[in-house]
Length: 378
Image (cartoon, rainbow, N blue to C red; front, side):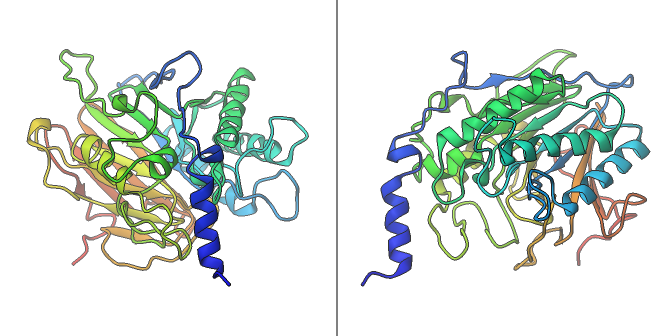
């Protein structure tokens, strides 16, 4: 008799990375492969401020279609910190927006659609005032954790669009997109498609327009972005249970190790962006300088921030990160033409002071740890 592990592996391989084993076609409506989303106007001084939180979509076990109480704790912390800072210009949700397997239907009576709407309402209420732009990225649970479904993923993207049409400022109804926010150029990737679909070389992904993933065109002029930030669901490096790109674990199985995804990250993100934000691990982590810098990008280093503790936590199993905590929380990013700052806030310490802060100054290749917040690791 075949083992349960063998049966599971065979079933997953037979099903394939998409529906019925077919290759994924990720062209978004309108024929654009890499969409341009509506951007965000900067503040009067030209700066922008936004929060990044992932894996926040756990339902309340005691109330159908409602967000888990822990999710309210994180949302309230986001609101308190943003208010204390003078407001957040937008927010980003880094995938696994609706557990356990995404939005099943856009019908208002569907519990998963109700949960999506409740998450949006919870954060908008916490932020106060007029609706704040909220950008969504898909995670593996938004596709379906064991049997990823393009139809399921597109249903959630349709929820984002419907939310936007209601005037609630939901954005990101695309698998891959970019937008401008003051001095920052933002890029969002549906990394679940890349992890599940790309071959080990990262050159054959079966995706329409996969050659547009890396945007590294030179830019000249005063209006050029100072900073480039990439966002996805899966980490490049992680001290959590899933591990690093190229050797990902799903529970105890290495079904989708993400070797092609790692190659794409090396090719288009690491050394080409200043910051990569992700979730997937239910913790808070910061890795600095995982690469020597790309000479053709001025020796730029990429900081890696895992912010996947929007509703629950899981343990850290390694100790490599410059900062790592299994605590509910989120990352706050502030960008001006002169500096890019990332702060980590958790419900354990509250809004009065971040647990960790890093800063990159314009013209510098790498980030610096602020010793006034957390001393550097020995």
